[in-house]
Length: 124
Image (tube, rainbow, N blue to C red; front, side, top):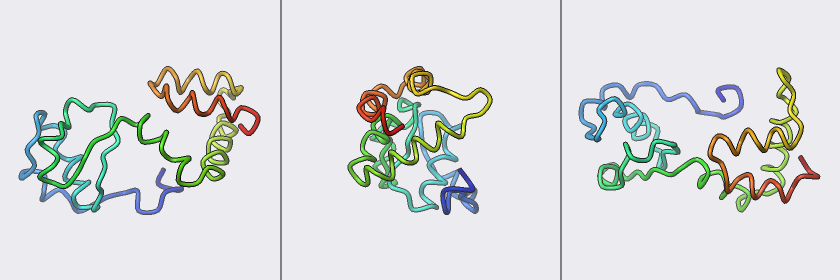
């Protein structure tokens, strides 16, 4: 991610960690980094540890990665298709067929995303 997403590394947030209140104190660094990086959304499979009531005071929300990813094609369909195809082709050890790739995403809990990607099979 570091090589492909500009500003993906957040540093200098450590001083905020003690002021963050969450059900699981071990997750405070995530919110501190989001605050410092001026994010509005935390994409996480661990939604129970980032409840809306705890995040609103920081002007943040948490969303399951599947819900986050499935919205991306609305922003720029061609770019998303190209990125998914390039990602699948980049897998070398082992390489994955389209069906294997989609099965892997499904096992990771990305059910909506896989449903959408199945419609684009020919482009992947």
